[in-house]
Image (tube, rainbow, N blue to C red; front, side, top):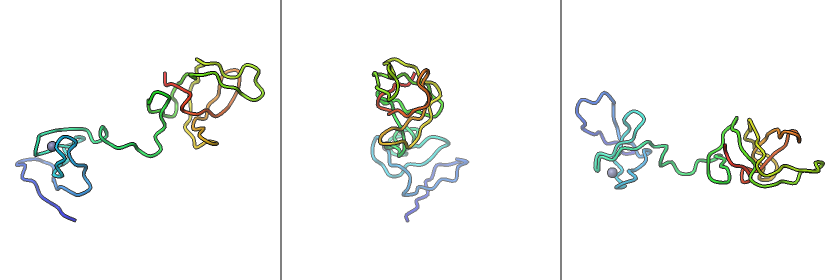
Length: 130
Ligand SMILES: [Zn+2]
């Protein structure tokens, strides 16, 4: 493990560069350091929030257009879905409130209650966040 101390004057942060810090997205420098919530590159002066460059996190569930979904979100169904036991199924445009993200059956990853249908599971690929 290599540690390198940076000379940044009067900073109140005790700053060490560790191998685990992300390298600079601009110039790929490895000598980046944390400043509050930001990452700073001393070589090209680029500052960024690490979350912005985070690679696809595990377990993130996205809707049909790439919005990240969270528990409690309201979504609309973007295509008509057949539902066993329901003559109408779920129509495209149906609003579903207060979804819950789950590891469901198959690729079903949303647990919710649909008006007029009842509790059921949906795939995130057929909904759009409102
Ligand atoms: Zn840089």
